[in-house]
Image (tube, rainbow, N blue to C red; front, side, top):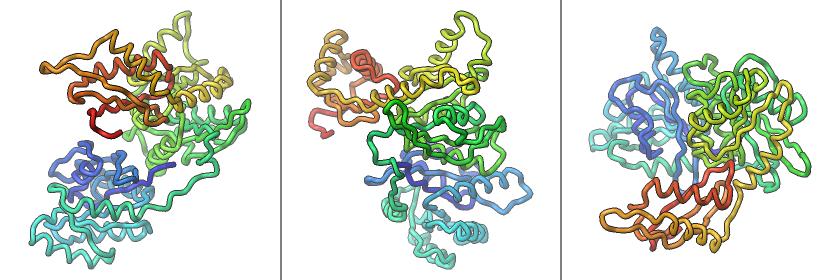
Length: 442
């Protein structure tokens, strides 16, 4: 099920990026006391209580039609507004109500979305008194906060969650027998062609014009007793190369599709190789714990010799180092070459993604690994792994209880992950490892 999208909008320099970083709990947006620093939408997963959502940061909205950059920023913000489920309209208590705020308010009214009027920098009695000025915008009760001092952020998040749309499931969302597959990648790498070949009909428009697919399209197919829900996503394009506004916000729709998927087909162009944007797209699916199959399309156009396949695979592994576990298949959607291999491979990866290991067997493998390569010591204290247990699937997630989590080094954790893969496979799926102290709950 896709997460709700929450967009933070407002005029420049009201603290949107600071609030974004605070809620996302990461230093993602550049924070600088100059208007126009945030030039494009940034998005990050966020959570409040038991609700997960995608948070979108936007550049400041201005009416400066003579400045091309601010026109672009405004267009990006308006796109985020169109795609959002809830909008946080951020204003500045210190500056008070400005004409620019009223202009932004006018845009938000026309969007007809739930809007939460949020007054930032309300961290003194003088600024708190300024909050009342914003009632004139007609957006209901303003929520005073201070992003810098973390004041009333919980109240704001409570209000955000309260305005989320009701959770809805598609026809097959609750069907555990259906494998949900998102086809992802940059525009014009052949996603729609692969989708059509898998579905067996011209369900998506196929064109050499990048960005043809605007929205995610769901199609359910049965193959050899297996049921698949294929999601053909809009192409994700590097922001500097995106021109059409409708294509820009299709990026967020693509992320929604990844959220809903069990397995993602990461489609690459054989001729172009791995680009930075490919790494970002694959990284999102990896971070979200989705099963991943790397599909190198247009293989018929590649100049080949006896070692081309091996060299290409080695280069892929070097370029996308975090996807060492993902199987690679070389196809030509145009000539229908090796497309028939994909359903069986998707099914296999889905099984790996949903695999559960018995606690006794798991601890035997971990015990053998520790005996082979004893844990390191730090500050005279030796790491002791007390026991491990699997707490969830999709992706397989393990909790390791240890005497001191602080001395579990990343390299030793990676060693344990590799041992789990050696013993159980887990091909095509990330593995999440959580380290806890002996008295901590899972």
